[in-house]
Image 1 (cartoon, rainbow over the protein chains, first blue to last red):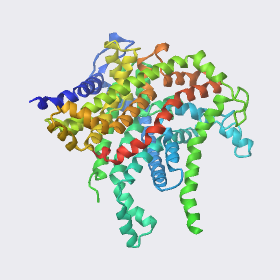
Image 2 (cartoon, helix red, strand yellow):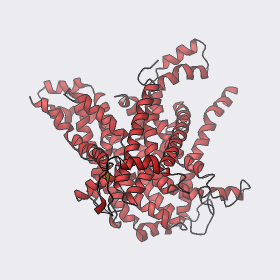
Image 3 (cartoon, each protein chain N blue to C red):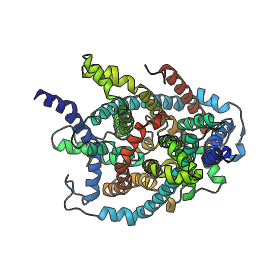
Image 4 (cartoon, chains in turn orange, cyan):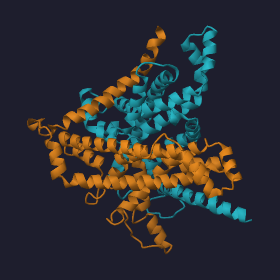
Length: 290
Length: 271
C-alpha cells in the first residue's frame, strides 16, 4: 500500500516546479499572444485575436530577418561544433601520455558562461591591445583590425567565439559514446582488411549515429535559443545583422515591455522548433541503428 | 619511424593546435588581469593585484561573488535532492503515468529559457520573488531539474537492485536500505549532478538580469555584463572580473569532468 504512493511523493517536487515554471508559462505565452498587452500602456490592453500574428507575418521585416539569421547561426554553429567535436573526441580517445590533463584542458571552456566568454573574447579581439595588434607587431596582418565593429567580419568573429565554448559539449558526449564501442568490432574489421578510414566509416560512425542525432538536435535547440553570448558580444548589431529571434523577443520584453507581441514571437519560435525537431527525428530515423 | 610521424600528424599536431585555440583566450585574460595598466608585455611580470582590488572592493564583485555562491550552492542542494528522489522513483518503481512523466521531462529540453522570460517575469512579480536570491534558486532549479533527474535515474539504475532487496530481506525498511546500500554507491553521481547544477546556476545570466535589477542582488554574470559596457577602456578590471567568475567553475569542472564522461558512458543518456 505504502509503495503505491511512494513514487508520486518522490516526483511531487519536480512535478510542482514543472507545472508552475514550465507548463503554466507556456500556456500563458499562448494567452498573451492573443492580446494587446503593453506594461507601459495598460489602458490599451485587451483581447485582439490573431492581430499580433498578422502584424508579425505581414508587417514586420525584422521578424523574417531574425528568423533567417537564426537559421544561419544554428546551421553554421552546430555543423562546425559537431565536426570539430568529433575530431577532438577521436583524438582524446587515443592512448597517450598526459591524456587526462589534455581532456580536462580542452573540455574546460564548457564550464564558462556566455557572458564570460564574451568578456574573454572582447579582450582578445579589441583593436588596440588585442591579438590582431600583437600579430601585426610580428608582421602578420594589419594593426587596428576591429573584427566586431566591421559588418564583414562580425559574423565570423561571433561564430569562432561560440565555437570556443561549444565544441567541448560534442567532444564530451561523443567521447562517452566512443568508449562504449566494443573493441572486437574493430578487431573483426581489421581482420577483414579494413584500414583506419574504413573502420571509422563502417564501425565508429554507425555506432555514434544515435548520439550524433540526439546531440545535434539538443544543440540546435540550444543554439537557436542562445541569447547570453550574442546579447553581450554584439547586442544584435551592427544594424540588427546578428539579431536572432530570441534576442528580438528579449528586446521586445525588456526594452519596450510589449508582452503581447513578444509572446506572439515566442509562439512562432515554439512552433518552428517543434516542427523542426519532429522532422529531424523522422528524417534521421532516430533509434533505428543499422 | 613513419609510424611515429603519422602518429604525430594524426594525434599530437591537431591536439596541440586545439589546445592553443582553447588556452590562448584564457591566457590573454590572465595577462590582462595581472599586468599594470599601460603595460603591453605578453608576460605579466612583475604582477599586480590592483585590478583585483578595483573589481572586488571598488565595483562590488565581492558582493556579486557572494550572491553567485549562495545561488550556486542553493541550486546544487535542491537540484541534487529532488533529482535523487525523482530519479529513484523512475528507476525503482513502476507507476501509472511514468512514461508520460519521462516524456514531459524530455520535452522540457526544448523549452527555451529566453522565450519564457515574459510569463516568468509576471509569475515572479506576483509571487514577490523579484530581487530575491531565493527566487533565482527556484528558477534555476526548475530549469535544471528535468535533465538532472533523467541523468540521476540512469545512475540509480546502474546500482544493482539486488543489494537493496537483500538489505530489505534482512529487515531494513526501503528507506534504510536506500541510505545504507544504494546512496554510498551513488557518490560519483551526486558529485557529477551537483557540480553541473552549481555550474549552471553560477553561469546563468538571463534570469539574474531579468529578476534581480537591484545592484545588491547582482550575480557575477550580470556584474560582468555591466563591466563590458562600462569599462570599455579598463580592460584590466574586465579581465580581473573575468578571472573571479572563471576560477571556481573551471576548477570544479576540471575535477568532475571525468565523472561526466563515465556517467554518460554507462548509458545514462540513453535512459
